[in-house]
Length: 433
Image (cartoon, rainbow, N blue to C red; front, top):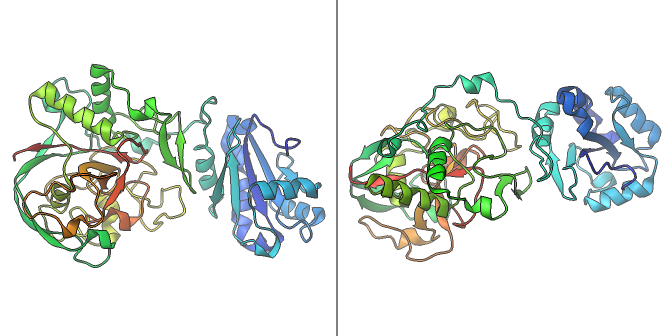
């Protein structure tokens, strides 16, 4: 395979079949135009098409196929060596002949890398281009990501420029009360049941997630190095799996962010360090919310809301950043447009009934509780704090990467407290209203 794969280029392999022509036409045309879209970076990408069934898709048929979609001379077409084709397909575990799905699929490999990423797609050059620009190697600068003027002109809630640490965190008072915690709609998983009554004292919650700008002040003051920075990077979703990249940290999440965006690639432990620092600076206690507090606040004070501040999936784009039509992954919701493919600036969407922003979507939020799948059956009624011990910490709210089900106000998720992902952040609470 070394004879035709360029080790210094990002390689894009398109597996095609003559049986695929009717459904792949738009995609193949987009693939043909890819070098034009890449512009000055086109020389760093090697485009290859491989027949998945050389017995029926011989050289002449495949050349005709490529000519039909204006492949041009810059498209490397491998069909002459059946041994090379067989070796490539075996290496990438590509099904052969009639076993192959008629839908198109790709494999992408970064420069100087031996790891291949499997991409499915039917949306032409735009979707593929986004995936290409996500493939990075630690020793190779990433291809440029353009930030649209629309993003720059969005309403902002810039908190990073404040000089008073006490003024940094905008808090919303949450009056204490009782509510029915858990999924009463019957549309979520078993671990959000049984529905049970919870009563809470009042508290104050951050109006927004902690932003990149705020975290930057913390790091400048303390010299804190996140666990991602110390431990080989942050995880991001490739389209088929979670992949850890050394180049990804809170400073570079793998996509464009500025000081207004929620900080990501921070672990539970990093979040705790930020809360302890802010408490020491202000003399006011800050901490991560617990799960009962978070759900009560998200549901506008314990109301029977499907999402934070509203019910009805059709209005989700007005309140949340999620995997909508701008999302680069196959599980997107193409009927809705929240305006952002990745994170959005804090406060870009409508608040819930208490005035809290982004309790649904944008980034998952670390909570103080240990995760317990059966804890709801054991929970105390008054001010529950979660299990005494555990392996994972709770996450709530969903993110820019997830579909509507995972954004429900009752939905529970969890992760290892030392791990970092580019769709997980946090917000803080303070005791008392």
